[in-house]
Structure formats: C-alpha cells, structure tokens
Image 1 (cartoon, rainbow, N blue to C red):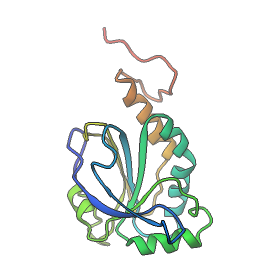
Image 2 (image 1 turned 60 degrees about the horizontal axis):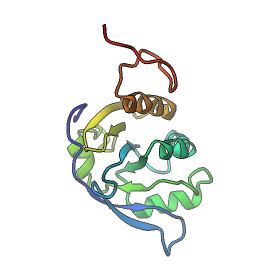
Image 3 (image 1 turned 90 degrees about the vertical axis):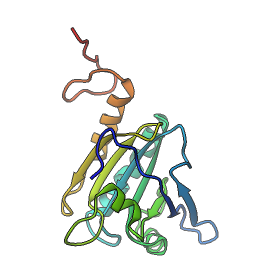
Image 4 (image 1 turned 135 degrees about the vertical axis):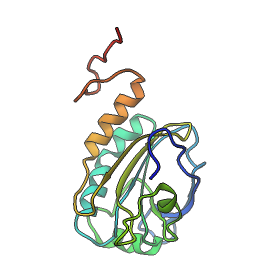
Length: 179
C-alpha cells in the first residue's frame, strides 16, 4: 500500500457530479486540481449501509474543506452509472458537492494497494495529498467500520500549519516549538 511520502498515482476516471443526466458525468485526472490539496476517500460498495453515512458526512464538511483550498474526491470500484443511480435514489447523496469517481477497472485502487483481498473492492481508505501530489496522511478502515471525516479535517488543518502539532491539536491552538 502506498503511504506517507509516496507520490499519489496518476489517474483518469469518470465521475458523477450531478443527478441531472444532461450534466451528470465528468472526466477527472490527477491534473484536474493542480496546486490544490486533495482529500481522496474510497468506500467499498454503492447501495450499502455504512458507506452513505461517510459520504454524506464528507459532503456536510465540503465547505470547510473548500475554505482550506481542498478538493474532496470520493471513489469506489462501482461504475459511474451505479454512482448516478445511487445518488438519484438516496436522499443523503442527491446533492453531494464533490465528484464520485468510478474506479471500475480498479486501476487506482490497485496502484494505491487498497483492494480488499477477499472481496476485491476498495477498503475504506482516506488520503490527504498535498499540492505537489505527495501523500501526507493515510487511514484505512475495515469494511465494516466507518471513518470520521472530522478527524480528516483536523489532520488536514495540522498539516497545513507546517508546524509540530500535539495530540488532539485543533485549528487555532498553539503548535509546539522544537527546543
């Protein structure tokens, strides 16, 4: 699995950006958001139970991520058409403010090393990638356990200070000074 300090892989994926079929789909690459921080998070399968709770939670925090010049990207190994159907039929996903990437060929998931060995789907992996394309944070949960998007935001805030941040540090608090 790729980890902190590694270059985030190149990708070129279709995504769902709207429930309106006339403008539902878009193509995104690793170069689509040059100069921005990225939060890229994966979920195992559309039309399941834990996944929409996480996706909706990231959606609710999207404004806070945007305030920090961060693009959120959600992804799974489902197709763009499955993503679209799920968004249309799930109240919590209908108005998502970020793209849902379709890694149907499992190329990005494979390069990242986050495919579950038994199920062949993406684990609940989260990556914070800096503007130079370097992975600065990785978190991976088991298929059955949802992650905490607030913690991702907290870690992002800490990374963007470029300072030493103690345990449980929150934005606005003092950072540590090296002696």
